[in-house]
Image 1 (tube, rainbow, N blue to C red):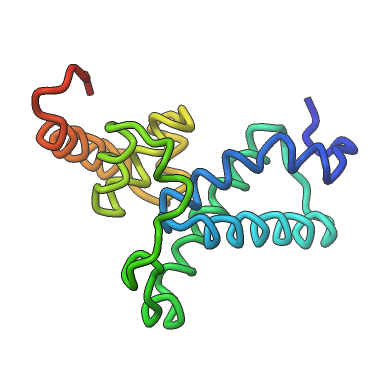
Image 2 (image 1 turned 180 degrees about the vertical axis):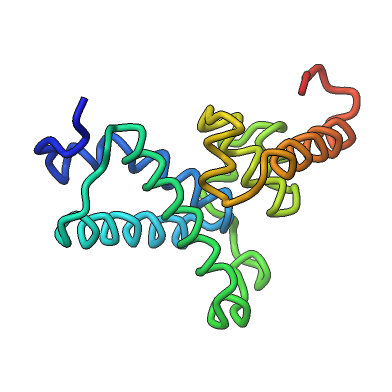
Amino acid sequence: MNANNNLSAEALIEKYSDMIYRVAFSRTQNVSDAQDITQDVFLKYIKYTKAGNKFRDEEHRKAWLLKVAVNTGNTFVTSAWNRHRASLEEVGEVASEEKEDRSEVYDAVMSLPEKYRVVVHLFYFEELSIKQICNILNMSETAVKSRLHRARELLKEKLKGAQYEF
């Protein structure tokens, strides 16, 4: 299948926005920031394709979108603006609607350090292979496997007594 077919912007957003949002949210843990990152990713996609760049196939397009989502999230989280602001939770406001509908496992994953949280999200929630994660995060296979192993150990400890397998 040629990924450079005439997929409309609406169809592209419909197909990938949830995936990109989840990746952004796993990085930022903030609804508004994740929404902003999702919009940024689609703007970058439009600029990329308008410049004449093409994708080999649909998997290439998906991998590109995921990589841009991770990189945009990284840029956002490490920005000076983001480091010097206070979240609503820190000033005593009600947490986002995302918290109302979360499971114990999801909460445990979101409480992991970022370097483990992103790898776990891509592996379990987006169902990407280790090799795909390596390409998206520019990491070695050993590093990805190590982070997954360490994340599983941390999750086992956090969910001690629960009936979950990792």
